[in-house]
Image 1 (cartoon, rainbow, N blue to C red):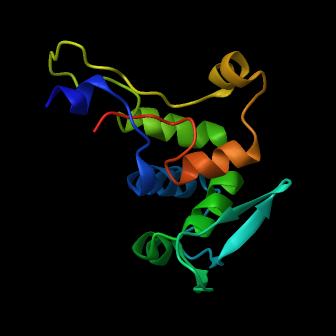
Image 2 (cartoon, rainbow, N blue to C red; image 1 turned 60 degrees about the vertical axis):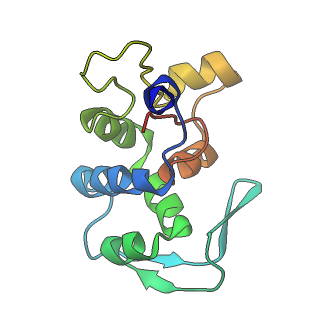
Image 3 (cartoon, rainbow, N blue to C red; image 1 turned 90 degrees about the vertical axis):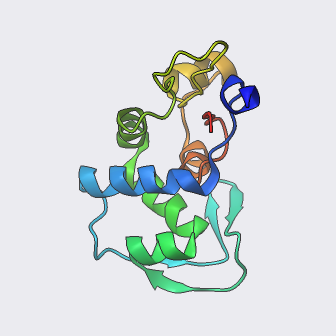
Length: 143
């Protein structure tokens, strides 16, 4: 049991819900907006892949969440931007202790520009936002 709260891990696709809320609540994405769910997309000089092979077509948020389409969330996350995603993650309790007095509990981490500058010598880039948008990269949470 202690491992569940004494260590932090990438949340993976469970974090897509937080990204969806941030995208919709900020107005960056609307419920009927569609992004292509393609096998991969280019962000900067890197290629980011969907976990599923094949083109799923243009999906709205509910469809993208149902399909767990990584490439949809890369696009939605970048369009939304880091600040709304970070704000909603914190509002939803990510990156914070649970509130039960557990000895050795860690908080996790929601990366922001300050963290990235201290750790990587740069601010958050679109590739970082893409990774965060599918619960990967520098984001860490407790189960």
